[in-house]
Image: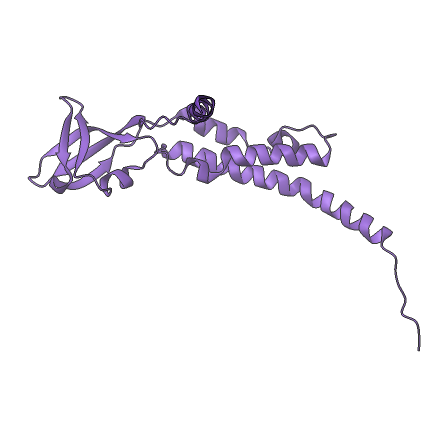
Length: 186
């Protein structure tokens, strides 16, 4: 019996889950019921959006004013919440402008001599990395969201541009090899 318990213990040790929440901070302006305006950071779990935190089950929000100590505010005292826009990231705007040339092989990171399986594999890896659902719960600046959206569209367009000739070749090969049957006259 001790052997079985040690086996069970080892099995559960391998699947331990860390349930601690990693907190992030979002810069916001809060207008309270009494008309006061507070500027600071709202502490939220990285896996949640501001909307989920403000409309979630808890009665309080964790707020740290830029010029004061951390405090907990009752959600019922909040009249308005405004997200403070982060400074513009100039390098992202430059990257978007640099992408004017459309080379599907370069976008997918494959050579012109790459086989269809390599193209498909590169597409799936990039599509997975830039897919909008992957970043849906993250609070990202608008510039980053725009960049990710443009990249996802470019990856899809590059794949479609390379897939079209591949499908045409595949269709032509199928038509050449399929026998043509003639119906016997009666």
